[in-house]
Length: 464
Image (cartoon, rainbow, N blue to C red; front, side):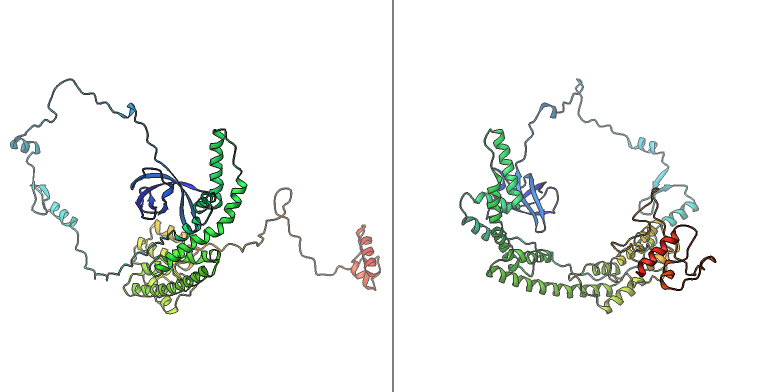
């Protein structure tokens, strides 16, 4: 279902498309078909747009022109002044001697950083000033600068194959195809509903949506293939520079959209390029973690280790041991509470979270630190134990029955469990002879009430 958002038009391209971004922000952003815009649209206009949000991104399916609010007299603010004529700005000059009298002459400029202090400042006030002076901080060795990676390009597909498919359609099918490209079958239904509302107001007959939807369903595979073809060619042209997420989305969509020999060949090339990109970025990822550890940037290395570019690949044992050792060395009794909480938070989502053993805990941990440890106790139970915090037990497996659930008695309590059967044999009564055959043993001892007869009947029935 489309959502309505405010977008700002940022530029116009030569092929008739416009770029946009969210009003007042840099993200999200994208492009839209110029045929959706109203007459007189220009760069910088902020308009209301109907957009579909899907896996491939945001697609604008409709744009509404900005509404101009008529100006009314209530927008004016009337300023009513006095009837006296007087200068707009007045100044009063005060003599220098009078300024000194007002200040009392009790303060004078100090000799240290322009501070003022009383004339009769004694030794105690001077000691207070010396205590307030900051102690010089020890000089730190400058950290080596890490080269920032260039921001990857976002995928910007063309429209050549889509225009080719549209040009080959009959004229009566082109409006339906344009709606399919904008929002799929739901866009066609919404367009028909909107047209029927207008026809109802104008006292015109309603349009039957069934044949139009059938045409849209027939055009959908071809249009989706053409749309994917445009995206795939744009991705292959800049396969080493575009964002890895965009490249993955094109490769995943190839399973449905690649329907002929040309698109299948293109999909195979993109799969090979994706594999090469993932392997390359995985090596760079490991190298960056190694560099961060050598530079002593433990928290950044932990954060980076939790975002591997190649999912499912095991973390190297040698690098894992170094990362765990550096993380343990960062958790000492001398570490401040804020720093301690930051390191534990980074450890909790890293692949070495079970191998980190803190060297100690702060003597007086802050409330914020204890709250952070309680929140992360299930992920780092060995660190929570150092604070005397017990990690919550893991939830029962899905589908397992827990005691007390299921049938309940009239009062709502669980059904009582019957006691286990007694293993000691019960001697038969003195009045009855000892049984000599198997059926009597199966029937059990006789009692003074009816159940004994029922038991014998059961034993005879089993024997027979």
